Amino acid sequence: MTDRYQVVGNPIAQSKSPWIHAAFAAQTGEAIHYDRHRPEPEGFAAHAAVFFEQGRGMNVTAPYKLDAYAFAHQLTERARLAGAVNTLKKLPDGSLLGDNTDGYGLVSDITDNLGWPVAGQSLLILGAGGAVRGVLGPLLEAAPASLTIANRTLSKAEDLAQLFAHKGRIDCLPFEALNCPYDLVINATSAGLNGEMPALPDGFIGEQTRVYDMTYGAEPTPFLRWAEGQGARIRADGLGMLVGQAAEAFFVWRGVRPDVRPVLSALRAELKAV
Ligand code: ATR
Image 1 (cartoon, rainbow, N blue to C red):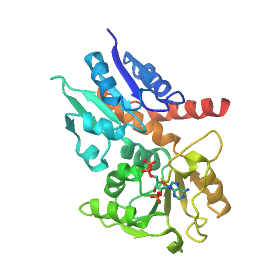
Image 2: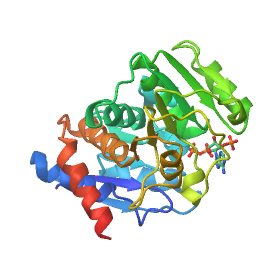
Image 3: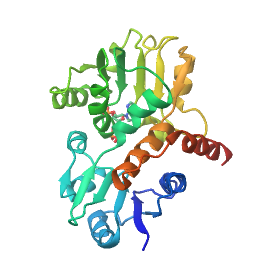
Image 4: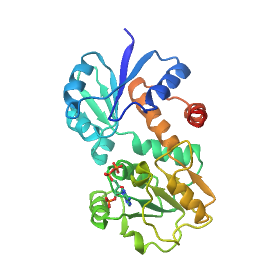
């Protein structure tokens, strides 16, 4: 029987993961079956228990990453630090390993696909929710000169700084205190998902600032359009992060690392065609 994988979330109809993993499977010659599922609102654990009677691995997206964290029998170090699981793998002894590949996906997109430096750069992250917690470990490991978190609710940024203090120094600011340009700015607020824009001041994005939005779409996101208006010439959305986290999950499951670039190009074309 073909090894079975699945992405689980709510909503799930729009998920690109089945498309991405089918492309990885075709590229690498790995035979896998990968589909999608939306459980009942409180039904993640019940669904996962049934799925893993046969299934080999699961990708988990909002709002179930904390449920997957609780469901795993063992956690990788990066999942523990992220406080969330986006990848479950059934181990040979039948137990479930919880992993988190989001931070890897982000950092590999920025450094490998886009070729932007992180080491030695001043880095600003906007937002302090679960998405930020998921990527802080790999970002700190990439050795920026400084890392600042700005959030509407300052105390949430300070909580993250404390949580990651053993991995590196994090400065925290309210949005209104942002006043000098950074080398790299990453938007990780969920505002764009609702078509909103955080209330941001002028002055922290310059012509040389590289600007990344963790959300993506067929059109430039509201944040990237705003950044363009601020003068930023180098901008990218989070489609490459999506493909990068999927590639790392594929590697965790299959031990084979797909080439993300052709899949990312094809997915971009597909997104624009819809
Ligand atoms: P996620 O898992 O996507 O990070 P989350 O944990 O709910 O979701 O966090 C959402 C983040 O987006 C938070 O940093 C939130 O700011 P607050 O901590 O102040 O709530 C931020 N956010 C969402 N909508 C926003 C908006 N319209 N303006 C500014 N920040 C916003």
